[in-house]
Length: 68
Image (cartoon, rainbow, N blue to C red; front, side):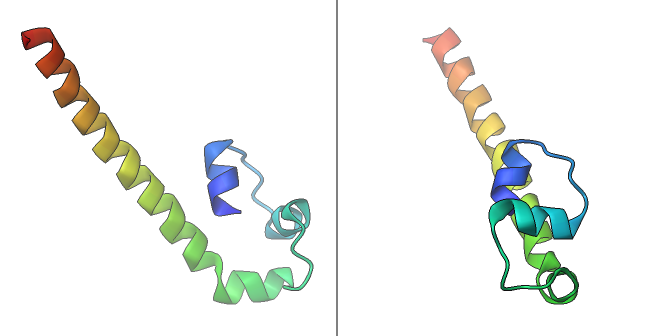
């Protein structure tokens, strides 16, 4: 769920609507907020870190192409 909303840059902030959109009906929004929201934040942080790392190595690759 976090991956989908991060990749599509959806700004839906209501947890209840997010859960409903992806079809999660077993978990109440309050339970999700209390117990699982930190996982969503961790996924977002990892994706941002991976993007920065990819940008770094792409830039090195482009420099090597220009110098070759």
